[in-house]
Image (tube, rainbow, N blue to C red; front, side, top):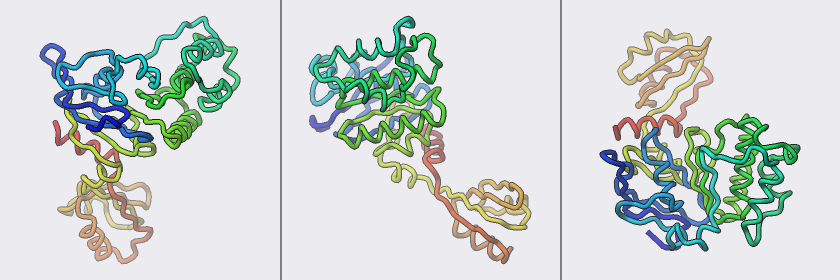
Length: 296
């Protein structure tokens, strides 16, 4: 892997007793790139991040941040972290937490900028322990970005956020990437990865089983969804050999198939009155399910 990468995992292996957490993964995150690490529980995502943060030492291989060890202080000053679980002093006000964290950096982001990007308006005088879970996540995000990181780790950042707060988070992350910040994102919300990621890496059993752009990952799955308005009997359509599944919602029918062209021709042959016909390829969620099923 190039040492110019913001973060790289080079042949990293880690074992906890009899459990193989990482089995020789090779990954890199370039400048101004968002990499989404996806995988089922126990796939190795959290271990990969812990290794990149210098919290654990690989049994083999190496992890580099900007070509340096994650344990080098000068390197760590360029890294921001928002972990899935975080413990903060409940009695401190949000303004106090932000001021304390900003004081650790030589050139921190302005308080007003942190407040705007994290949506903390109206919360600065509130004590952290009195905030809702979603509000606490917004505070944690502000703390993660207040040091102007060149590399940002976001571990399930939108858990607990409502729709508006999640939209604000997505816009903020996109802005950071546009400004040149590299981001490593782990999330179980596949629509989040689909909306934000430049590249996706799917982990299963400690291995990278698929990597590429969202489009490349989706293209690995031949599955298509056909939606239309038709009077045909859904049960009868379900007997067609190319059809994986079919469901009806009122006058609309949705068909899942690996042979969309054949099924569309059959639909038009059986029902000349078919309308509002559309064919969609598999989304990232369907691709993820197929890839991890194959890996298992």
